[in-house]
Image 1 (cartoon, one colour):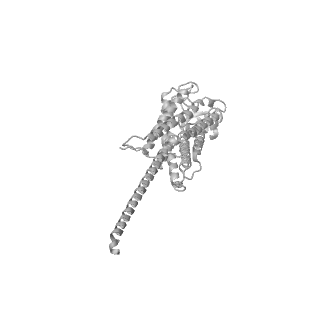
Image 2 (cartoon, helix red, strand yellow):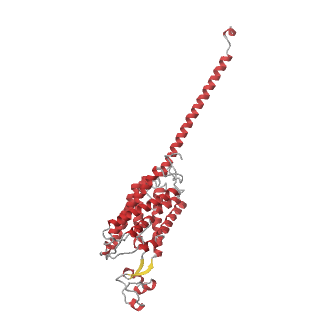
Image 3 (cartoon, helix red, strand yellow):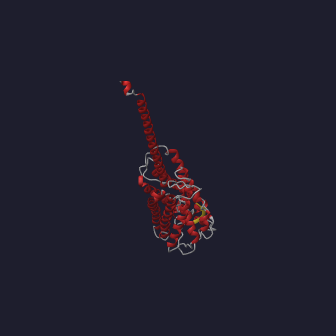
Length: 377
């Protein structure tokens, strides 16, 4: 296979180009640092949530860590790989043909590897070994601020409170009626499936549509400020989704945290070993399927409503989600211009040759037809 420095699309018949390898390495490093920051802050905030008002402060801190983290590292690697740092974003762009499937799948592989590295490093940095950053769907609880259902008895009628080890296990309805609305929260065995679907699909949709409208849409006014808007969308999604799923909206981040959970002896606040591994892997499919659906929904909306309007090829958003492909396009333009220049030179030479031949023929004709001096005398 001939060497082609301008080739950007991964070809199964050959290895990735140097520029593609740089882009893949950038996704690996960027994802590792992003997960290390976000998951690491979540680890460190585990203890803070048990202090008065600590839960709210902890949620805000973690949300800021993920939002500012994605802003920083997308900005850092955007010029090399486009700064996807999320399989849902990459698949969204693949659906819109902004990146080829082969290169896109390599991006996802690097994102998963980077997430594992970042999550494992964050786990090693946690002095309390608190596996708080794993994405799992929360259970409904009765009592405490969940008393909005009316009272504990009414809540337990909706959700099964007969959970082994719970103080409510085995109590009849009369006993449950005696428990005050406020006070301790009692877990149930009912997962928040409905809210989890909503926060993961809409959260990922919010992220991906922000990416598309700031970095892909040619009428965007964001320019190089696109990562700021993207980071804000991640921040908002975490504020909403942390109480429900710990907020994924990023399958690779979920995968990395689950891998770290599987190899580290995490503890809870009472230094009792916690085994959330089975739950994390049982629900892993959820944190791939629904974020990807949210990304594809964003791609469909963008394709239907925004793709043609304002997409003037002569305009530039100032931000490129696939600089590798852009380099390839620039290489093709340079090659085409070089080819056109050569054709113009060849045409000029041919024209000069034709003109010289015509002038030679005319001169010969004049010499042949001119009368001699004897004839003129």
